[in-house]
Length: 139
Image (cartoon, rainbow, N blue to C red):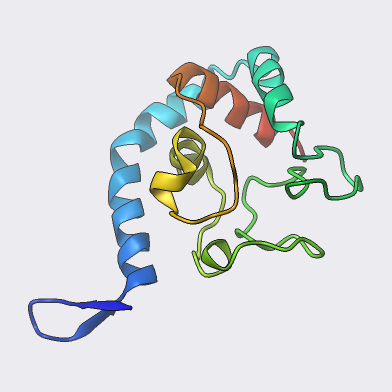
């Protein structure tokens, strides 16, 4: 599927999504940078417990319902070998940086419709920042 820009040339949907996601993350970049300096790992570990229902988090642990989250920050989406990712996630072109994680964890279905993560999202901004902090520590 593609859209046509004003010049009449087609714009692939994935490219359009990447552009929109990038535009949405710019306003949050400064606040996320500040959140990194005031990282609350303890709070993040508590929030991360919700994720452990479906995800393993330690290096070398097997996949669960969801892929292992160890080392996710900086990893390309759908890059963990041995996990059956949704087609939409495989084609997303995402890299799991703090801005992308922030948007995805807030509402994964809004950011990437038809992905397989059945999760309502982390609606509290501070909880999301804390869980991203905890994910950054998983190296």
